[in-house]
Image (cartoon, rainbow, N blue to C red; front, side, top):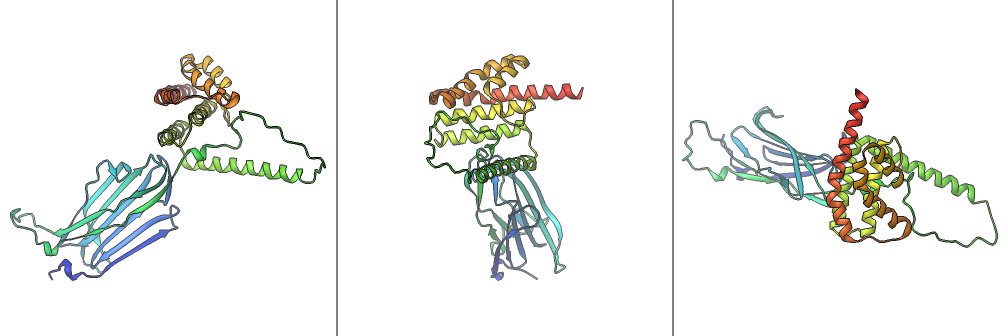
Length: 334
């Protein structure tokens, strides 16, 4: 029986936040007669440079075919880092009729923090042409149609907000003298101490779980933090002093990990260890780490030109550290 797209007047649309599988997955479903479309996003929030999966599935009757959009390098403000496409597959529908299925899986990544929109994706349906049908025959556009997903906003969180470790607080430039109480009372001291210790432990556990759950290496973690730092700097959300301190923290964390420490090491310890292990890297990092210490401890300010130069060279420094870490791994496995 001939089907016309105009006869399928009722279009149903639904959005579901699924709790099964990965938490807070977003699923959109639409139907236009026997045509069905499903659009699924693996999570409602993610981290900067953290992969996010998107699936698109379209099911149509056997006498129709689907034209998918071209998925090239980007989808809106998202970078497409991987894709898998399956076209014109057999599909067993609930009604038992002859249906066909088109399926796409995209792995997306965003380098900007905040609310980042996954734009609407439109698919077209056309009458199926037989293999021996001449291409000169025009398309019956009364049978053609399209369906589009709704835009979805994803909360992309900065990895810098997760890099703060309560076990390694940043130094304070100036000491502030607080007046002592005239009527000493020690009743609140135990409660405050217990509360502070509990807060530190909870923060450390959350950080540890986050890093363990992500299952990423020190090198990947450091590079993501560097990418995020560059983004914050380019958006002028950080001062030169703040940027220098955070850049120093990224490298000291990574070096501390290679030294077998569970917390950040001082610049002096990091440079001393590198001097014994790989002097060239120590010389490269010395100016940046020293100036960051001057900013943190002595209240000396840095300038934008210095920060720009450090950020430009940061990838090279990380390549050197990654090579050093790979050498350690090879020696350990030898």
